[in-house]
Length: 128
Image (cartoon, rainbow, N blue to C red):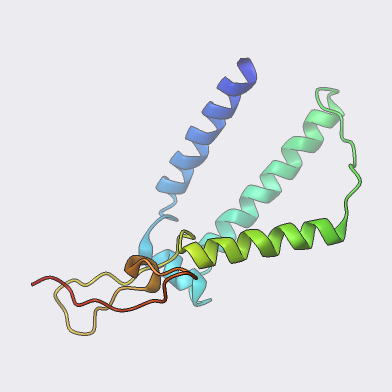
C-alpha cells in the first residue's frame, strides 16, 4: 500500500511541475511537434537526467537493486506497431486538434470527426 501512496505522490508532484513549467500549453506542444519550441524536450531531458541520478543514488545507498531483463526485438517492435496502428485507426491517440474558434479556416482534425478504419473520415459541417 505504501508503494501506491509513493506513486500517487510522485505523480501529483510531476503533474504540478508540468503545470508550473507551462509544458502543457497548446502552443508549446504544437511548437514541439513542429520542432520550433524545445521547451518540452528540455523539460523531459532534465526529468530523465534527474531520474537517472536518483536511481543510481538509490542503488549506491543499497535501497534499490538494478537487474537487466532479457528482451526480444521482434516482440517489442510488433507490440509497438500494433498499439500505434490501433491508436491511429480508432482515433484515440491524443494530438493537437484545430478547434473552430469563429475564425475562417478552422476545421477539426480527423480525431474530432470520429473516423476509424471501419468508417472513413467524412467532414461534417459545424452546427450554426
